[in-house]
Image 1: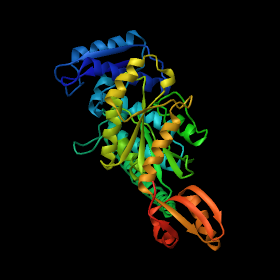
Image 2: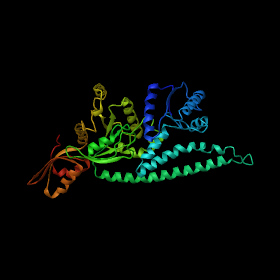
Image 3: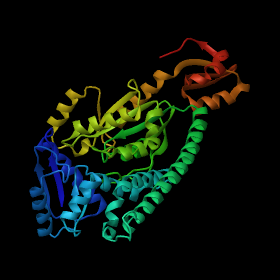
Image 4: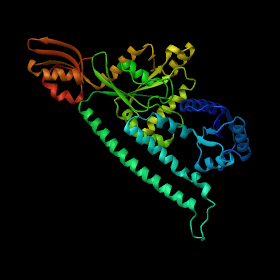
Length: 418
């Protein structure tokens, strides 16, 4: 049974939208959904979030529909979770959106870093909820008034064990992150420009990466199909190489512990030269999805002046041209593409190349035959628009990475070109 609570500062339409999203999340986990309820409250209650009468009514409904799990879209405190399960007499498990997302992330994590990040987030989530596991021992009293009961003792042992696990995972994660940062620094010594594909989950980011790079990474029509970042090389029309990274999709009300845990994974978005922000043109919540993505990027520390290409994907499935016209007015710089059919992809590549070339000097060069190593390096790290073998050397028109400018300066024929 899914429950969405409309708080005093919220609207029922937003609750409905989030509840629909929760249904997708729960479908991804594989639970069968028997019933849904929306509840509006005037003031959140500390004990159960809603009033005790309404809570009893909801529990009775869950039992009537033979539900064994209640999932709240709203975040529940550990105490509220225990109170709900006590109200259901221990016959119904009560969880919230955060635990559903944790389950999905735990199922999808593949790399060592992602597995550790999910484990850390789960341990930190479970630590304050351990008490409910030992309430059955609360009546076991000792002989003296100062002696702790067995339940309390076991709880303390478990808490200590979880804290020890958290320390261990943090240490392991720090080691993995340092290793990845070392790899990134090695990549930076060969300064191929990079971009990251970001956006709401299930907007088509992985499909776009496949189309741009002729790859075949996993791309499914489900939430969080991609969890670990994947990088592929993409040759631009001029031959300029570009590394594109697909990142984990964002979602509204993403648990803060997951934002913190996945900062390392999402750092690719922060350090890249520019971003491609993918939106599903058919989503009725496209504006809130865009807002969610931008707010998470800001929280991660992305610079405000970072260049972003906004693209509306899935136009092959667009059933209302009026929607496209409306979005074009509100997002005048955006491109409309289909990662499935390839429509608009060339225009996207041209825009990507324009951004890269704005950061790379365009020069005419005459490089001696004996320095062909520089020609080969320009093909690897720059963008060679024109190459011609002459008697006195190789004539090139190329975009030059900043770190190579001093090296090729002796071979520059005249000023930069457009």
